[in-house]
Image (cartoon, rainbow, N blue to C red; front, side, top):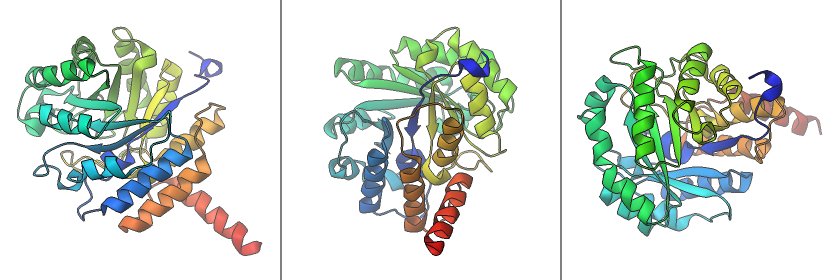
Length: 310
């Protein structure tokens, strides 16, 4: 696909409230999480990963998932997704009126064993009742595949392994499948190879790219995925987040950086970049951490200059 055949419109899935905040050591007040989701809704996102229903023992930061879901101002047309590792989590998601449940597994056998103490096959089997219940309840079901472009334990992950997991998740009835570079080691050529292989077994318009920026390749990988025909991408406002199981893995690619790239390519998203920049500034200040978005920092500095000279 040539640059002239890039998608005209891209769906950006904002994962900051869940994937971004879950690894923060200090508890983030529920009111701040609600305000973050509300700001993102107002900025125009079509899909926001709001929280997760996992055991507080494993992810204490997400213990207030039900309160977050109850407190947000839902924007019509926005899908509010939650991560659900088991039936108990699924029941919490249904009670909280989630629009989409997210199940997750790895493309790397070593990562699966170290992360959730079972094989890939066993992890997917555990999700069968959740997938069935989601379909019965008329909820959207999304499957996320971590370590699709590399693993901290086994190194390279064969493309065939990723394709195999895509097939398994498709068989569960997933509406969308995320191909995630959890530790950010992917390069553009590998990204295209993996995306095109996955598109041979699952509709390309329902595949998404989830990139981390550990090696500074995330926006280049997004461009490569766009050239492969991918039109759904995940990102995290202010570059929040990392992976607790992957040493050295920095956060998800920053939403502001992705929106700037897409805007420069003339691709529609329906999202207000300036509103996202202000939201990134808000959450960075609220949790007391540096803003990891280059575009966010640059635009904020420019806004301050303009305000100072006015």
